[in-house]
Length: 108
Image (cartoon, rainbow, N blue to C red; front, side, top):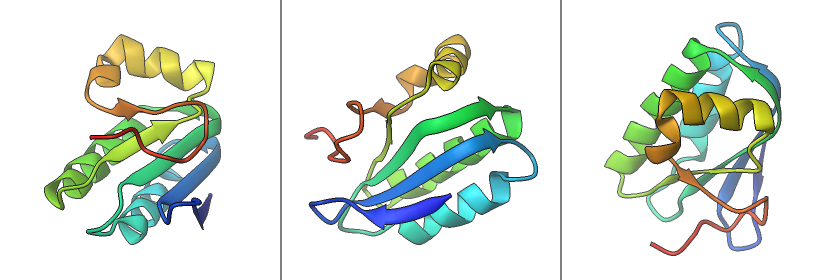
């Protein structure tokens, strides 16, 4: 897991591998560290190979906290595995799913 800054100053949390009970807390901490009052947060899921219910819960909780600050959690570069889980769970309607990785959240 790596956090970087996009070209417009947007924090980008890049995740690789599996998001499960053993990594969910690290993801939550990274997302909350990246959250600001001035920028949305981009979650780059391009390298995610698996996500379980604890990972989904973590993303939902972070989404609520970031949204409470008046910002958005934008998910980009969604791997086919994660896309299927988001779609089947209906969470694709909750989250802003951005483009394929330009790290710029869509206009709100």
